[in-house]
Image 1 (cartoon, rainbow, N blue to C red):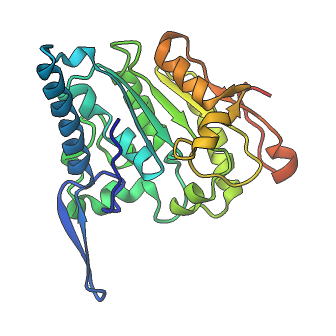
Image 2: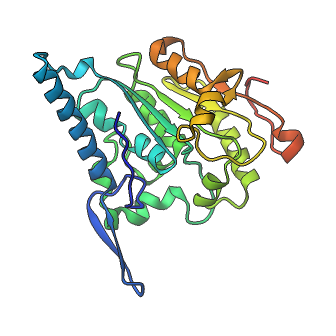
Length: 267
């Protein structure tokens, strides 16, 4: 297991540029995508060396990988998913973004990130070669694009994990309110429901929550549609052909005034 924190504030898309903020004296190094790749290469080399020391051969196709991240790391997992699959040839890779649905909000939100920051952050060379227009920053665009790329092996899937009430996702993507974000999350799920190789775990939490993978107690106990997150992920890795969405209606309509799902979900 390798855990990669970061301090580049570029949701792991930066291609190696320094951004200077005039009037503040602050410079931020935008190296997120490069750092993610270096960490993955380091992991590969460490495993390769360990196998060699045991007299075994390294084969990329024998790697079974869960490429996951929470919040900014979840964006990093979805925007860099092509690298372990295509460059490292880890063909049995599952992508699990947590609390990073990348919904379209209002104002200066995620849709403009690539366009606004590409000259400064040098993002374009590091984005998926099958999705690098400005709107590929959105989950509703990049997940279907990934869908067409995935499926060569059963483990090639995107397993989206997210609360349905998330003040952090709402605020950082410039939504006018948490409720507007919740409604967008619900509608976007229904728009993408059934997309091949793309699945969701979305509890109808009745209080704000941000991330599940980083909170051990929630990872162990949080349920959606009657299954815990731990078991849902374990089953998806053990029997990927049988994975189904775990998305529930819950009581958000009655308690918070959310719009009901427009597609079929668990009660």
